[in-house]
Amino acid sequence: MSAPAAGHGYGRAFAFIIVVFILLVIIGAAVVRPGGYGYY
Image (cartoon, rainbow, N blue to C red):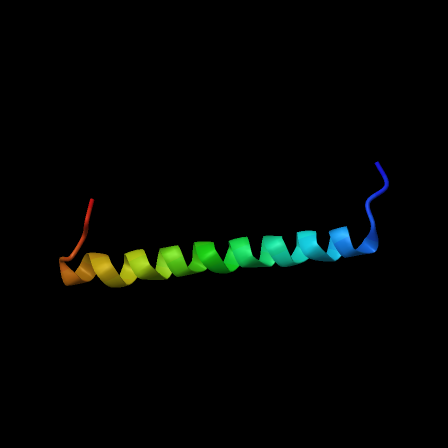
């Protein structure tokens, strides 16, 4: 499989977006749970 350079850059950007999304989920859970507004 010959992946172009653009594909490699897109993969890094996609991984970065996933990391940011996970951090937002963790921060959101940390903010919501102490407030007593947990949905689970």
